[in-house]
Image (cartoon, rainbow, N blue to C red):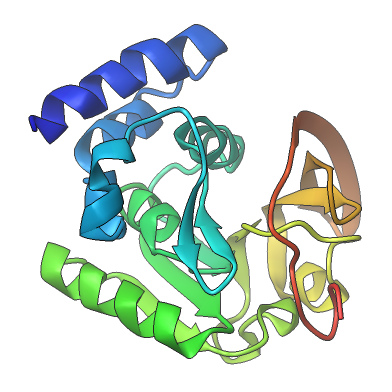
Length: 212
């Protein structure tokens, strides 16, 4: 299979027609080998327009959803980004192409270890992985310029708002367990403004400040 060709087709047919415009995001989506973040048995589906199960009740998000959330983060290149929910590691790899440092927290140790091995194999040196309750963030490394939550949450966890720097952005799927909407929060001089974007369905964010 020509995975590069499949990535190019994915970008041309799934992302650009749906309004993804940021050239850096599109280039990252063309570059990062999504199939590498899946079991070999599922690699032929890697560039399909769908989320795919990765075990432990988790999924690798639909390419379009990864692109939407990444574009909403408005990454310019010097940011420190916190990701909640490493999963396969694919979203972190996309972010690592765009930002200075990525800090990613995963509660399932096996997934964290698999993702870390993939980052190493692909040569990423700017991704830092921690096993723990993502709803508490990563206080030792705060503040962060950008925060992305890759699981559905009833509300934005308070510790994450506290760990966001001024003029920072949080992107998260907010709603009930079975349907959410992408919410973008911008912090400016201590005040929060929010806007609402794509409807979506993510696995639940489990933790002290998420779903129990």
